[in-house]
Length: 334
Ligand code: KG4
Ligand code: ZN
Image (cartoon, rainbow, N blue to C red; front, side):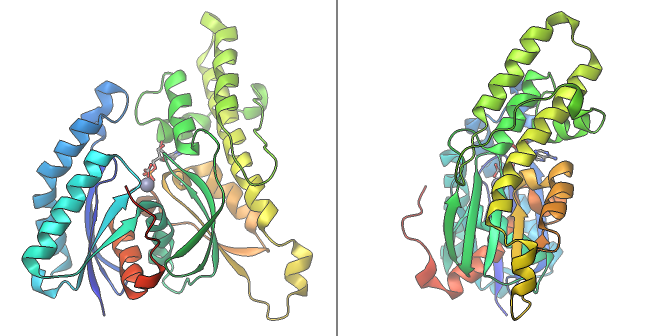
């Protein structure tokens, strides 16, 4: 069975993993740079790239030791080649190329977004394409069809901000600091969306747009001014979260079969649906996605530690990309 070493450095998590057969995680060590970037209120690309370079050697030793494997046991090196911060990607790709050359192993570049979908296969090893995926991260909100391993068709995406980016900016407006998404999630749990309703973005077709919602929040905060209370902030967090989540799920709902269609289907095979990426860690999205998909398809959402950036998902995706080399889209580059 293929033993793959994965390396992920596309943004502010440095991660090294060893995955067996594209499905079984033997180790997945992750270092988050959150403390490094907090004082700047966001990821500083130059600092992020340097930190990846400093930490990778130790994380590599840890990942191999935890998996109880030697470099000689590794069959394949898989590394995120994009999308992401270019300086950060270069560190991961450079280190992986060095390892692959020194160890005389093959290397494959992985698209980070497809990696997020493979995280679901680590969570449910029997999961196979065809599937429908909603990949929601700090930089992307993509609705994709995956007809087979290594093949992805984007059927909907955002016109402006990604869902994670919208959460991060809203969190900053609400004074929640960095990282914003998880903080907004926590605050929203104490709020009531109905007390401070915000518009739900809805474009025709399968496109998303979150910049108007962000502006609506800005104006509401301006109107409230100094009178704003902690409860108002929590209510606004809940309203913002609800608008983003319902907008994301509205498009998923559109492409899912109706209950009647499912009942009429001969084989009784349920369509597979994956909701993945950092924003898939959001509690409301997890709950509402389960409700929307219920009875119409089978939903897989990776556990929280596999939703946010990690190298195990890159190793998993790389294993399949290597098995099906013809299916790797050569236009994907960083
Ligand atoms: O996939 P990811 O770890 O990195 C990228 O590929 O971008 O996603 C990070 C994004 C950030 O925007 C972060 O705020 C968001 O995921 N996020 C969340 C939650 N946890 C992470 N957004 C909302 N609720 C959460 N619980
Ligand atoms: Zn990501």
